[in-house]
Image (tube, rainbow, N blue to C red):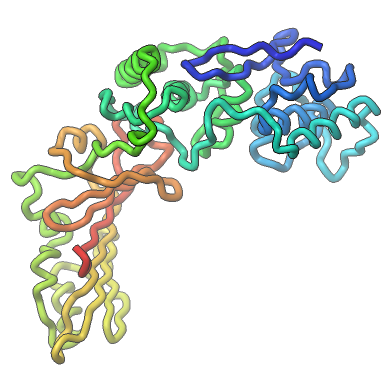
Length: 372
């Protein structure tokens, strides 16, 4: 039996899918010929799992597993017809049952081929690739394989369905991916000017062929949201109504005086304990204050605010004065945190919004505690 051909895609060696009568299969002959170990030992564990379930999919098996269901529904030949609880394994021929068993043994053997790229624990390789113009310093921490995925990530944001089984399986696992256009019908005119620039930048980076040294493969330290002094010398005073930093220097006689203080800034106190207070204002900004007892007085130790619909977007933020920052992904958000006017501010961008140019934040959080 002929092995699957290898193809180089975006500088990463990816195992290509077999195009068979305009239908994509991992193992086109798994329903008509007995497989042996040599026929499958080029497959990754992911591909072996898909190939095994490909046999069931040919018979209309409806998958409960989200990733499998999404993958097979993108195959032109797949006609879902039978629920899992109604599926009779006798539908599989003796040959097919043999191949299912072999593929399952191989899949769990620990001797499978390695993916040419690792599954990322995060949703995006380069979260800002559709939102802002990237520079080399934003991507020079990437391996060439990661850069290849980052380039295809831009295609995936527009619903491209990949011929590569590895790529399709990778993106199906991303919560934001909405496969809608087959690769051979994909129109590159959908790309924005920003995306075209970033694709060219990534292609040039890949073409240069220079891998970062092992010690240099770290997250980038750019893209911080740190405003210049003329705009944000009174950041929390402008956003919340009072200055968090000077608030920390205050001493209060009791919780009633703390409540009275925040109420003058149009916050309605929702809950208090002996050493904490929670409040909200008409803009739905929530405020939490924790206090310590110091010499028969109360002194703020932690202050936290959550501000919804804060008016800032990635382009505006990008044009600010950059400083050191932390970037991460949390639940359904891409987050950038930095210090502004003495407080830590985290900007939460919805992951789905990063599919489009210049998204705005869902909300920001502002914190100031005894460690800062």
